[in-house]
Structure formats: C-alpha cells, structure tokens
Image 1 (cartoon, rainbow, N blue to C red):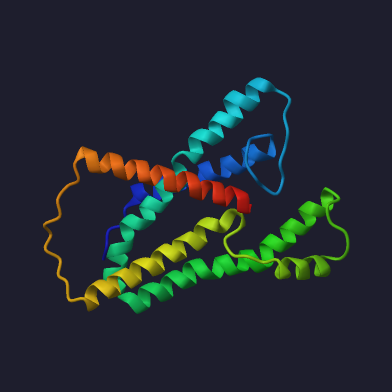
Image 2 (cartoon, rainbow, N blue to C red):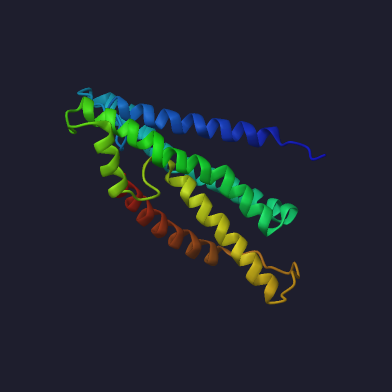
Length: 202
C-alpha cells in the first residue's frame, strides 16, 4: 500500500485557497476577470492590498499546481498503462469540464448578465446563443482543459518513445546555468503569451 504524501495535500490545499482568494479579490475591485467584478476608490487598498496580492499570486500559484500534477504524472502512467491512464484522466478531468461548460457556466453567466442588464429574454434563448458561440477552455476551468491536453500529449509521447524501441539509459546530464537561463527566458515568453491569450478569452 502506497504511503500518502500529506504535505502534498497541504500544498494543494494552500494553493486552492489562494485561487479562491484571488477571485474573491476581483469581486472587491482587484484586477482580473470574473462573474462579479467590484470597484474600490481606496487607492491604498487597490494598489498595495488587492493589485499586489493578485500579482504575487499569479506569478506562481497556477504554475505550482501544474508542476505538482506533472511531477506525479510519470508514476501514474507507469502504474496504470496508457489506456487506463487516459481513461482515468478523461473521467476525472473531462466530466467536470463538460459539466461546467454546459451547465454551470451558461447558467451563472446568464444570471450575472441579467443583474447587469446586459441580457434580455429567457434563459433558454440565452443558452442557445451560448451553445452557438461555444468554445472550450474559457472561464475558470481553463486549466482543466490544459491538463487534459498535457496528459494526452504525455501519453502519446510515451507511446511513440516505446514504439521507437528506445531504452532509458539514465545518463541524462544536469543542465548548466546557461541552458537553465535560456530555458527560463523561453518559458517566460511562452507564459506571458499564454496568459494574455487566457485573459483575452475570459
């Protein structure tokens, strides 16, 4: 029986709390996109408490969650195999994503827009319009869509690697400072671009 790593559970809990606080801050005037966006005239609170809070959180918390997921992915794949691994991931991630995209998001968005007098008509007509303009990966569950893509990509990479009859030699070299700086720079550019894409899709 595998020993559960409770400190990982604690880390995940802490990061999830930060995600919740991030969205709560938007409701009181913090920068970002959410169903309810507040406003504050208090300059000190806006700059030092809310904006800095969100900026610091966004600099690490989602990347940290992705890192934790990626760290445990190889062991899970090795233990379950490709078919069971993908089936498990699609069930655990795909079902919540579909439920959010087709149930929670359109209903929540309708009543949010209704309170702001941005929508008129019945919820059914609004739902049909939502389906007509539907696209995956929008809203707060964008990261779930990314996780599905990453997991499917990892499984395909493992299958391709196995089919090419390559063997693990465990002789990988630790990257030096030069390569780590290059990697950090490229990762920063990709992250900046992807964050702008996510922000634009919300």
